[in-house]
Each structure stands twice: as C-alpha cells, then as structure tokens.
Length: 79
Image 1 (spheres, one colour):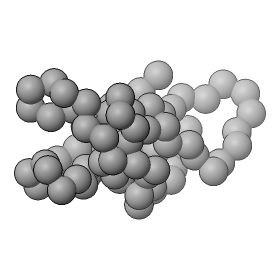
Image 2 (image 1 turned 90 degrees about the vertical axis):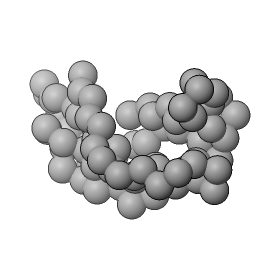
Image 3 (image 1 turned 45 degrees about the vertical axis):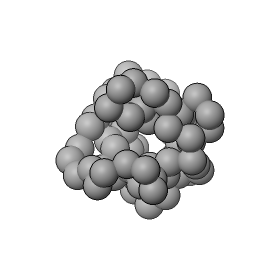
C-alpha cells in the first residue's frame, strides 16, 4: 500500500510515520511504517504471501509527525 501524508494545505509531509492494518485477503497490523519521503509517501508491504485472486485493503489508524496535530480516526482504501 502506498500512503501519502499531506498537511491541511495539501503540502506533502516529510518524515511522518504511519500505522494501520491490512484487511480483506490479508490480516496484518503495521505498528510503524518507514518515514514518508519529501513527496509525503511511504510504501507499506505485508509480510504475507498469497496466491490466486486476492483483495487488498489498507486502513490508516494513526499518523505521527512533530508538526502535525494529533490525528485519530481511520481511513481505508482497497483495490
């Protein structure tokens, strides 16, 4: 899953850390992503391998960065 973090004005946030979980065909919690890059994105990879037809969803449950206000909630997307 690729997660992009932006501030409230749409500017990418560098060095943010994302937590969340995979859902649908996968069931795995990610406690801490690699930090986002200058483009605000980080790629989160499941450690599970499945064969055949799979559905993938990822839900963000927290974003941590020193310049952002505390964010709580859940944002999910799937493919």
